Image (cartoon, one colour):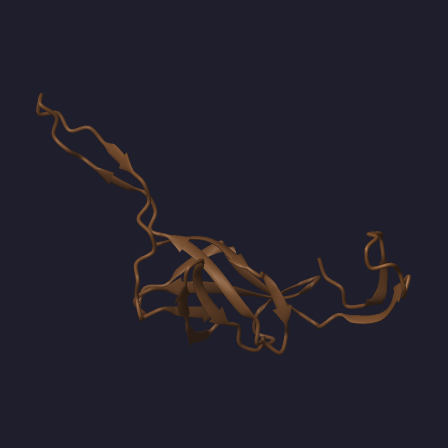
Amino acid sequence: LVATGMWPSAGPIAGGTLVTLTADQGSRTIYPMDLDFVQRATLLPPDPMPSSRWVFCKIGHDTVPGRQVADGIECMVTACTNTQTVNASGMVRQMEVSINGQEFVASDLLRFLCADMPIVDRVVPSLGASEVGGPITMYGRQFTG
């Protein structure tokens, strides 16, 4: 199993964000014998992620049940604690995924940022035509990214 991505990659410290983790089985190589009895490697396309009812996510130190969906595996992020790695934007939690409940796969692609919820004080302009696009400016606190 090879982790290939995660969305969204950030959410509130209180937890409750539903995250989709994507993964595949990786490429397979077979070694058939040719007519001259020499083995030659043949690269096959990746296996799709196997169907499993034993889908789990590890989020920091918490293990939670997951759910297999068409795009990958969905897991609910638990509340962030102060035991996680902290950077300038908030706390970062390592996420891992398992399709058998025993062997977990981690990746640098599976890092979840826990941040304070943004607070929007005002939006300028506050009114505008619905059919015309245009820039807006949001003022507030705790914006990340």
